[in-house]
Length: 500
Picture: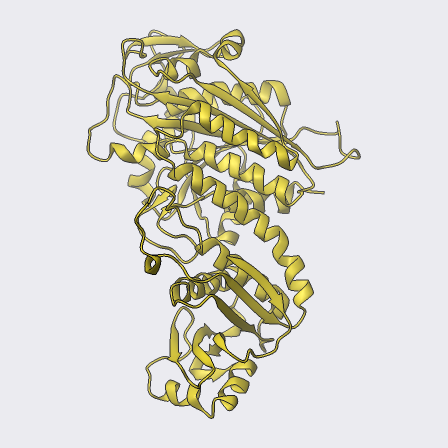
């Protein structure tokens, strides 16, 4: 879908979107269009229950010989219109009008009394929401009828300050590119996406200026990554570690402090290994690489919008399979840090992957902050459902910044506890630690405690995104399927705290 910005002139034909505020108050463009249509919009409003409430809409079909249809979009109280509300409006517009058979929709964006945002900024946010909502993953559907495909090719936003709107939208568009890449990766089936092919996808970021390195099994063995390699040893597909570097801070900042670092769990398929999962629902484990997908998508977003930051992305890529060479319950492995781990359950594998990835990242890059993302535990879904991701951190300032960034973009977090009592639960009699606590309680926290043992003193946060990586229903700006949760959140974190 092409998105364009134009002067605030009412179109002569096609589909037009105009706003209606609380109590059926028409925006200036809606009033002008109503006059042109000889009161057709006012009559439609009077005959309906639609009152202009935010999130509601009313379609007026064929009001004259030229205008195909008018969509009256509820704006509610202009004083309460913010970025998220406008993005949701854009998503609603796309969802409601993309399948009409028409190729172009014009959205009239007016200056609204009481709204803190200028029309150009409003138009950019509406466009961003529409772009996010337009995502589709149907590459493997060979028999789609044309009526099942979106007809909308161009979304035009007509507003004062169209050039400013275009400039404001440009970085948002690049962030959407990153979100879409993450959604694509999470949606791919595991027979297509494995550690080798996922590493190849990460390498495509080189065309944006990202330096990408791929470490193979021999490289990791030399580094002593026994924890990560143990997870993947049962698979016919070899494991990989991908390192992505974006140098956007400029020469003035070079060498003054470390980069901001993001680490992702990339289990391209998780059978559970020898501790095999039940068959029901195992197909969902194609997206157990969601954390790695977010890190790759984030690096694309940062590079795409030329973020003024030095950022590093490290993703550990493995496939957890049962075979004659697979890791066994009771095995003891030695991590890159030198710490030993008793593997009591091979289905608690993500933390093993992250253990070596975290240690490698801090050892090599000396980052000023590290954030890891992983579809780590089912326990976090029991705690938070599919509404929020779990946030664990050793640093209050970082935790507060992440929480605020999540609230700002609608990718919400909830801070969970860490502490010595939880840490003692993963002590082992046979090794330095065990990979599960052995009980049913505090599963997400003990997993985070495990990770913290590979962090040292660097400010660090762990995001358990198991409940928010995939959605079974449409959201305002997220169609069902892979969500890309985390890309916008971390992009906002970088923009507000680490750029410049």
